[in-house]
Image (cartoon, rainbow, N blue to C red; front, side, top):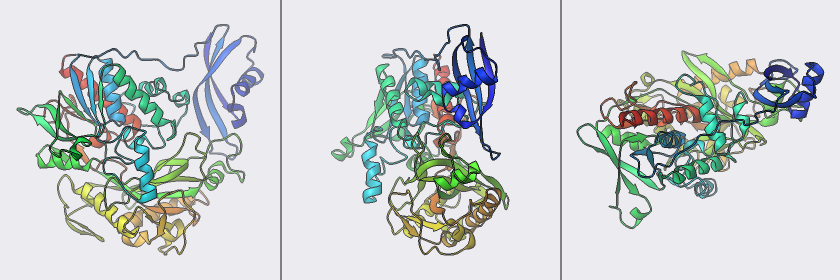
Length: 537
């Protein structure tokens, strides 16, 4: 007999299979001799009370041998010689689109402007060490996209558009821990995700697909309002021959990510329908992880031996706009996420064990297109204040100001949290995980007031909800601007093709239809299915 049992246990009980088995036999009355196997299928931490508890759903096998296969494997066929589809971008949207195309018997041609996931590491190290940003290889561009060197969060609310379980199964098949199948807020970790991504690429190649790195899309091939391929530039050969280009033919799934600003400019210049969309802008907030553990677990001892690094989530309405925590990284570190010159952008990530000295999150304010207009916006002068690219122009100007405040390097402007709330300059700063370094700066003064005033109000509210959260032990680091794409590439809701161009499938976060690894992966699969349907495959 197979039976799922709901348990509410202490953390030390949930920490091991033997502890769970003992609880089942002693507290639930199961006969240990008849219990042939168990598997945790759901797990979440309840830290609302002083005594932290763990909620479990445990699958038990009684009097029969257990099926211990935690996930379903997909059989990917050979697609050499099959009709091909071009996939622009090797982030989660592009990789999952390519894998789904193979499932459907189509041959993916993946084109990625950045380097493979391992070669990216050298360029990321140069950002911290030399303050040099390679515009084609950074924390946003390269195999795996912006999620490759991140916390690897797999939590999403986008469950109506596709199967989250399917996405998690694919990750497990390519090397992710099966813990992601049961955890309420699953994550893979920046130390493990690159290997998983590499395994996905090898699956694509082994099945007969193609993957082209350091190859940048520069134009679409359009015939009679139909996209029939794209023009690309090989960035290595272009050093020798700037005129070198290569064409790839087939329908195009465009999964370029939220930072591919040159793509947005290309589409706007060609009159291809795009529109400005809302974004969220703010700062990265960093606390000592031990402090967050003490606050969230209501204990002077913090997490202790059995609990993971604590998470938090805050949201507050302030002057008609949402203020909320975003991409919370327990036990993680803050990283430089610029993709070009004269930019300072910060993001967060954490390793699988989340055992770092600091915890951070984005603290951002909702910004709508109507909030941004031509001319003076507080102390920001926008050259492109109207049209589809105005939210992107707003991002760019704020990032340029942060670069100036940071000494025209990747040094990030920062302020102690309570000083920021009270409008005071910080004369010194706490230690930080941000490798390029921090410089004290009055963010409350030079950032737009409609951002800072709402953040200040939100921080006060969060401090009232969690005593000790609003503190000068925490650091506000500027600026967090890349929470989502500033543009939506308009597509048909039924066919997922562009509203005017047949054969073009705007995909994932960069097209404005996803917000994170899992939702982008789901959208990638949907675009692959739409392309297959149009090709009668």
